Length: 281
View 1 (cartoon, one colour):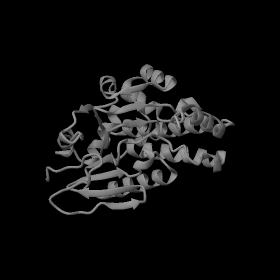
View 2 (view 1 turned 90 degrees about the vertical axis):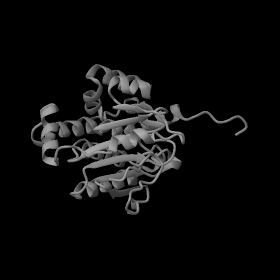
View 3 (view 1 turned 180 degrees about the horizontal axis):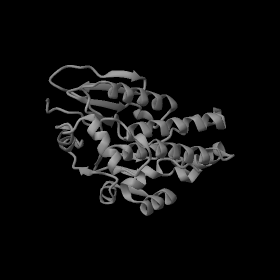
View 4 (view 1 turned 135 degrees about the horizontal axis):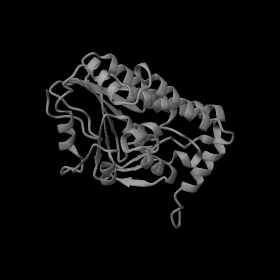
């Protein structure tokens, strides 16, 4: 296996020259040496999850899992931030039903990552907020760069998304506290609580390259079927494949998003959190 493995904002290079394949205008996929590297590629918007990006990431994940050579799917991001959450731009043009569908598709992506048949890895630099923090939490191995921060603000506009998965990582009481207060956590706090598996010290160029290479140097020592069995045995019972729990997660989301006034709540949240204008701007 090549030792030159992917780092955030940098293309995956191996001894072979497989090109990164755009799976849509907002993400790329590259498969080499058993590692499928999915890069969120919308840096100008902080890699916020647009409807198009969610569908692109779902397609990339399915393509990676369909390749029998793949043992690890790694999520990285172009630019400063891993993912700043649900894209709040253009909301004025959406109906309540369209907003609900967008949230359902985000949950579909998160559940697909959580139940992927291969090892999943995420490395967060900068902000991993909202649905970006949920994507991070859904992965098996979660590496936080020293500058990473985490926040779960969805409850501020009435959305219940990813709470059970977060609770499995950090405990029920702490998850409730983080979600209901919208607290912002740094990398060390995330690691101490169990949200992050480790904190990666930056290399000379500011990337956590050494920890990233170390994390991906070896694939899992078990096959996909055994990995699935271990997950099933170590997670709360939810029927075959965890379907009952997945259905409960989706039902909780839909109930919260179906409350009248979803669009107004999100617009109000956007206004509350909008940065103040710069002097003279």
